[in-house]
Length: 456
Image 1: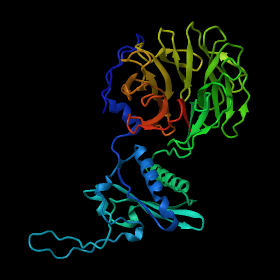
Image 2 (image 1 turned 90 degrees about the vertical axis):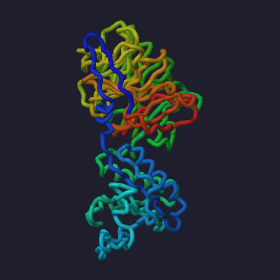
Image 3 (image 1 turned 30 degrees about the vertical axis):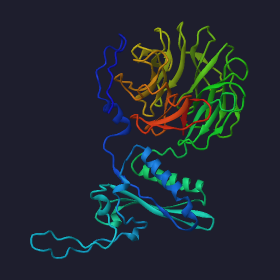
Image 4 (image 1 turned 180 degrees about the horizontal axis):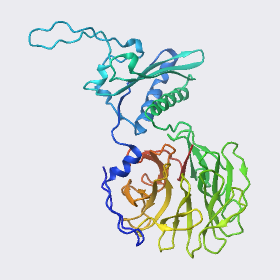
């Protein structure tokens, strides 16, 4: 586990104590994990050519969930069950020679093949695929192999249908993995989307993709610069800044129809960085209407807006806690950009970060207790890394460590994953990781890609 860095706060907060990294991390990813064995599934007939895609997708979904310790395939027994009927309980032990323990008589695959060394699994996912008409049919089971018999071991036994194609194989793999994840109390990311800014078509537009980086599609076509996207908590609306009208202003679109929704921008030189309240009934944003970029809150159509910060400094990136009542934002009121927190009316503002370096891009965890943010603490200006902070204690942990410039961390709906942008591979791209900094994956490769947000 990574070393936790002590956090020196401003005078109001005092000196925060050192917190072991796992105390923050375990709030998100948990402690002991079940050991899951996932042997390769076989397919009959026209399903067979698509099983490599199925097996790779199923394993990746389960491994990347962070819920399991995956049993090593090199330790699997030679006899792999495909159906419950393949299990054969051993017969009663024969009389042993004097001084030797009596051993049960093996009849075929059994639960202890997986629960005992060398596999040492607590659970087994198995099954097979075939075709029925124009459908690929997956039969999948999940067993608790610590149980004494097959009937008590079964946790999942279900059929999944999809087209007879690589895409169909991926679909049923995602669905089976989602059911396994739910069985262990996890939240599936199956139907979630990541929205981000990409310049791959020559202008900076909003794009979308699936959590594994597939199905990348252009969402806007303003042939201008779009930036700072934000999605409502219910996943029905997206707001973003655009230069489509010359000066930067906010546009809002429905994610259900794709159509643009009404929003009246204030008469200012810049209006940007929108953020929805959890109920979607209010929109926060930053605007230079008063001269300095200050924070405002109003209706989603721009009406009845009120200024909620009153400083002579740039205030931006307002994010409302999923539990309501508190806003984290970025302010230059103490000099360099730092992360602050305040009430919904702008009251009781306090600095969360120490004042060292630049701290930007705060994002609330779904539980409303933690934030992820980008911080240049300990690095030269502009060299950011991703950090987590427990807001109540002000204690924090560092997730990335100098591997390029890492910014704009945003929590996934499951509260276990983070999407962020990094230039560690050259140009800025979108990456994901578990909230303990492991399972880092690059999702984009074309053009420069920035500012991801993760929507249900």
